[in-house]
Image 1 (cartoon, one colour):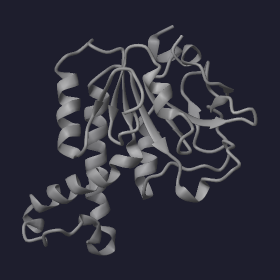
Image 2 (cartoon, one colour; image 1 turned 90 degrees about the horizontal axis):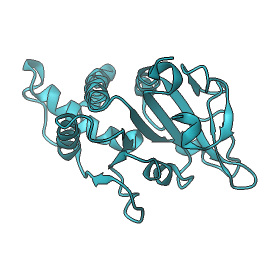
Image 3 (cartoon, helix red, strand yellow; image 1 turned 30 degrees about the horizontal axis):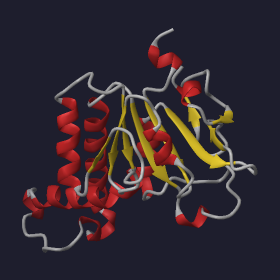
Length: 219
């Protein structure tokens, strides 16, 4: 079997805050964490802190320039960097003929009839293409929307914390989507069933709800 068939090359893991997403990634041997949130400060492991869109792009490009340095590259988190991508989208719009006089300190998302969302989706696709090209095995972490954060941490009915069509862009770009949660005994589990938007193109994982273990995901 090919690597793509036996393990996810593009993995999305999302879940409630504090469930253990960042810690899980820092425990994956050979994985570089690109930390946009600052959640890894108390954790050991391979990691680099980025604080804005320029640092993020520079970091990804430097990783790409040194192939085979890391076995995996992970981003924490796609939910957190969406406002950064909005800034990139706004700058992109200002560089077009129709946007050259766009007011300063104004988001492209204020364009009438939702026109600015085209530029946000364009920036998201640009970032995903860049991120996926930096390493053969990539991991994206994400949060659930605030309205789903409750005491019942089950894998049903959850939604990735992003806006509009950006959710679908990310879901379609990855090969496996797992929801991380704690069971009643506080054991970390990952759900690859299709009860929400979860699932996997890797048949070995598809439909599974298992105790979290990297060896199960990347054997």
